[in-house]
Amino acid sequence: WLSASYCKHLQKLIYISDQFPVNAPAIWALGASCRMLDTLIIPPLFSDLSISKSISRNLNFDYGALLMISRCFPTTLKILCIGGRQITLHGLKNMGKVFENK
Image (tube, rainbow, N blue to C red; front, side, top):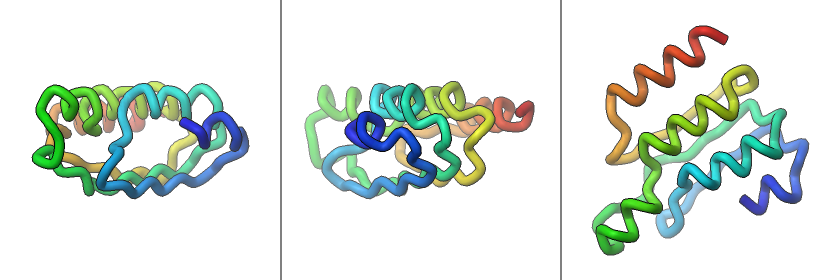
């Protein structure tokens, strides 16, 4: 979310962390400030096993984060690379529909 605060003209973001996964509030912060973002790459490096279940539910890149991407960047995003254990085929299909209609 710091990128969103300080880099309003951010166009490309590659976020790699096996300790702090991207979540829906972080995507919302990017979407609220970085309106020119056209590339978002978030590889699935985070392991659900490395932290407790109660914390991991709140932190993991999941359907909520996926939904937030489709809401925040429906017209600007050209390159998207995401993944994670909690991403489902249903979520990817819904996201595809949003981007298909742009």
